[in-house]
Length: 122
Image (cartoon, rainbow, N blue to C red; front, side, top):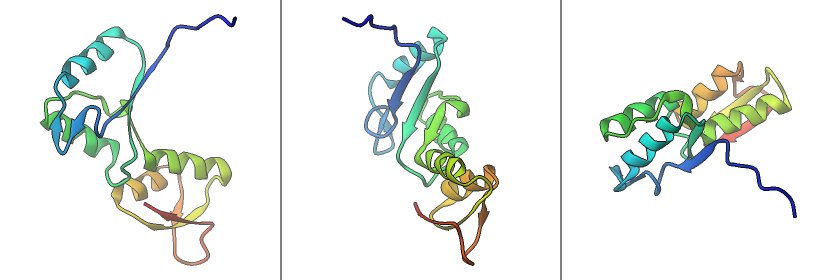
């Protein structure tokens, strides 16, 4: 039987786990405090590509949930990383909000409707 390794980092979903319809789920603040106090790395994940991590940090803070910007990972960031892995410095025609366009700009992608390398729907 293989030896089980201890969990070295934590992942949690934001929508439906920490918040529901703009309201923190009971105990979410205590859970996040325990994660921060543990010193272990963690990410709060969301499949919502509309907002940037900075936007989500501000939104969560207004609800009393403290999550550092660098601990928020969105589907837009995952998409940008995937495209950068496939074709660094490429171009994309994007149908989406600021979260997606910002993530692509941040990796050096050019947003264009003239012969883009990719079409991205957010």
